[in-house]
Image (cartoon, rainbow, N blue to C red):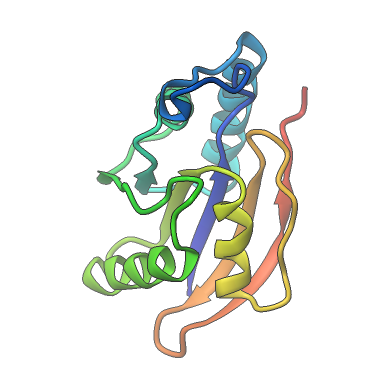
Length: 155
């Protein structure tokens, strides 16, 4: 079994013309740090896929303060308007190519994070709080998944 952790970025500033350049707020930074600590204690992810949008990159930087990743990739498929089915196909391919990695962290945005859960576990589509992390058990042999729950920041 593998673990897939799907995380929404921390709280971001208000909408603006270029959505990709929105930054985390101070609260968003704290949320991301908190969840990075939680991940280091509970799951110790060793692979990271992150959106190219700045708020997701900032969230990843905060998570990296308490976690080390042997594999990292900026993935333009996990932006807010991306295709969840394409993103999951890509993630499953990466998992099959890197059998040595047991725990994968994906940092992206609403609504794609919810849609990705639904792709893995049909019928499950949680609404993520900022910096929330969904935990999925995934079997690469059968491609079956089990939704274990959603963790929110403790602040």
